[in-house]
Image 1: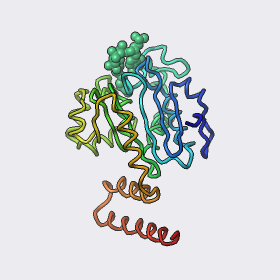
Image 2: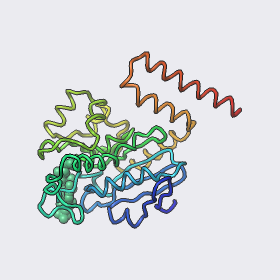
Image 3: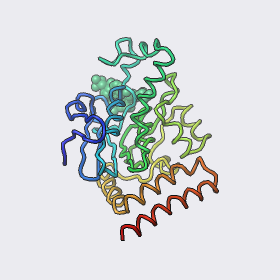
Image 4: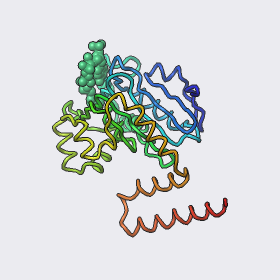
Length: 272
Ligand code: ACO
């Protein structure tokens, strides 16, 4: 497996920098595996986590087709680092007390920067998979939601805790949640801040696959192998179509299918 230093189009981020933030990233051919690696804090996330995720996305080597996000230890992620709620905050990153004093433009910029860490996972040229065991709370749930697919262990516990803490979920999780479970169920899940377990997650479409915890790595490997077996350009075009479908009319979607297929068929026959 390659060193974690990434070398895409933007400035690379080193394994040492990532380790200081509590992340690892390993690139093995067409597969990138990002690991939340602060198990002693249940992989709690900070602003540095989100900036690093954004940089990983921006510098991802061009050959990568599948990105797996996983968490070390018993929990996928216990959400935002709760030290953000203390006056001392997280060393070097301040606290919500300092964030609250930002003017509108600076606040907007700070949250947009955090959201960049999540948004790239929808890119059409990759398929992102969250491998989720144990707790996925708040920012942890939103990180899993920002992936295309979720493979979960039987002990998974999703929870959108933000409203219980006086916040809204703002790490791009509300849109996929509503798209998957519908507005009413999303309201119920978020406004009660209750836990969603594996069986319900599967039934609601929040998980594509539920497996015993010890089988999670193998289940992800099998899924990755199946995804890599398809034609890359066709997979990219198909994901682009599927991601755009909810925002289009049937006629618009049919036109988009024609346009993508024209490119595909011309490319196939040009190369034969
Ligand atoms: N931020 C900072 N540290 C955390 C966090 C967190 N979000 N979650 C857990 N930790 C730390 C604990 O303080 C503890 O540290 P310690 O060993 O120094 O005491 C260690 O991780 C282990 O945590 P435990 O609570 O002992 O682990 P357990 O497995 O029993 O429980 C659980 C895990 C359920 C995730 C629990 O830690 C928890 O409820 N955490 C807080 C969840 C939360 O409210 N997150 C914010 C959501 S809102 C948002 O993300 C925007």
